[in-house]
Image (tube, rainbow, N blue to C red; front, side):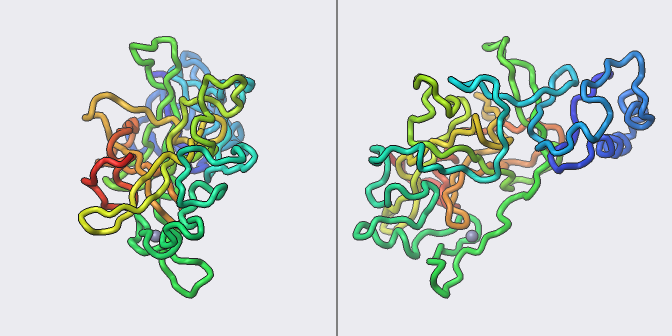
Length: 327
Ligand SMILES: [Zn+2]
């Protein structure tokens, strides 16, 4: 095998050092590892386009590049309307900019929430309507505590570490889908083992009014709907006589084309047996979040394959499974 097609880059590790460690672990002393050990690229192996120098990635986010099937790398670019081939930006939290939102609320904006407040905020009920939505009934999906008013002495949810902090994953090219042979297929490979039911990431992007990422909009600067996921408002319903919180109408589009993180590259599969992660909405630390949860053990080297199905719409706030359809 002459092609080196994986590098550990998600933890800002020096990739040469990491590769040598990996080769040691798998007891590979052959031609794959030789250039990294010796610093001399063998003449019969195509030179790596980025060379052997760790400085190549200096100052770059680990997911600024994806790794190509030919062993090389390329920059992650987004094509959209007036923004052709712009580098994709990596962000940690979703971006909310009021200037992108209309003066009047979109139809799907819940009547019981203030407009225009941060779409992810769970504590923004309009005065006079369902006042308790802003108080003490919303339960954190991680710690089971309530969200309390930060101006009071109550403690409530104090979640700070609710997910795997720096999951080691790699954005890389996979063989194209048979139905789209000319389309570049990027996916995400696990560069570490994950256990079942771990939160390994959060889907983040630009929070846009529902429909604003529609590709039919002329000169749409927000990319298109390829990297867009719904964010649903949290609402209160009564199920079997008990009040509980669950996803309501779509409150925003999370568009990750222009700004986002590695989770935008997660692929799906029509085959249920391929799914190893799930997108789900949860309330964590006062925010509605779209989380990436492992649904089984995942081994080093596996591609992360998402189910876009039930969990995303039905498991808001922890264990409220088996609820009747919403909307
Ligand atoms: Zn919590």
